Image (cartoon, rainbow, N blue to C red; front, top):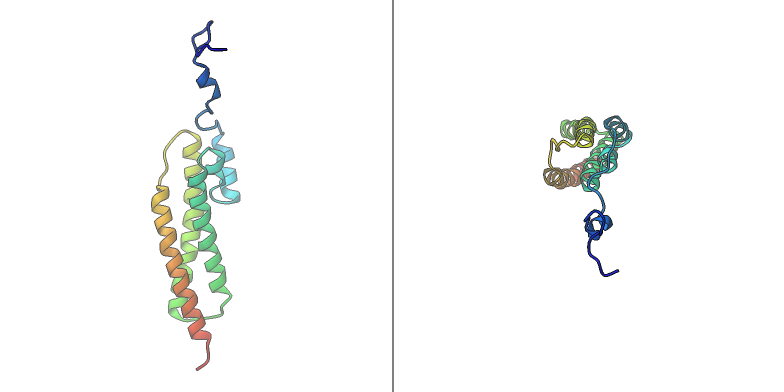
Length: 141
């Protein structure tokens, strides 16, 4: 009980308690999960925080695009912001699927999660501005 290594093979017992690196995932499975919802493929491939960043950006972008579609506002600024959010949602959707395959094969990300989180902060500010603009233009007077 006091031994630190196996007497037969010399393997340290501490290595038996460690969790492995990234899970082995088929690239096709990672892409399939990513196409269901961006970020799920990254999570499956052992990169949950990267998946969270992509899923959050996709949800906010798509949610704001849908919200702006239902405002009924036809102002040029509203349409421009709608196109911005819709474009961001499509870009995150496509790039996440490609990245999920790369990560599952042991490759690296195309876009770092730190950059995505800063984009998310910027999109949040644009969202608040777009909502304020929609409310201001819908308010009579």
